[in-house]
Length: 244
Image 1 (spheres, rainbow, N blue to C red):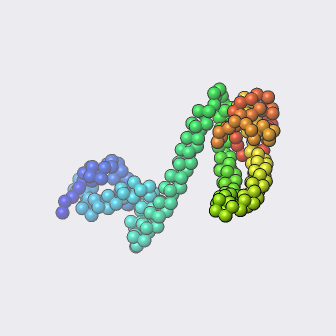
Image 2: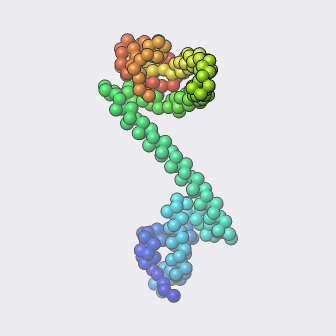
């Protein structure tokens, strides 16, 4: 059977000589024999074990865990548990990185809408992004509560066209008006706006907010703190002084 020196087994496994020597000191990969001059010699089985160690290290499993695995009576069962734990850890790390990527992407998108960028603008973006999930829940609440109204709308229209009975549609109109009033109050009670000039969080007059030009994230308003008028960032929250 072929024998491999420390340098040869290191080259075959794509690691450094010091790594092979380190595994020897940790009793994870001990050489099968030594030459008369004291040089380590590794067998074919040693080479296979070294490749297993390298695979486990690439999977992120610690040297201590690998040592316990290789010295255990039932390495198969232990390996299954280790791989499952490592998989869960990697998934959590991927999720955390994805959250950070989404945050960076959100910041980049927000910066496109800011004409006069300043240090305070970063704080405005951070505040808005912290409340992004709450804004999504708010929009989802309005969407879900509005679905039955849409069903009533189309049912009453079809009924009117097919049978000529119009009063269900008239009833729908009254319900829609009441829902619009409730929805408007509910929505503007939950949201606030960040002024890009003074960077304060404020709540505008409801009438102004309702008729103002807007995008999904911006609304053209008059700041109640500094009086400037322009597109303000919509966020979830109450009116308050950010620096107070």
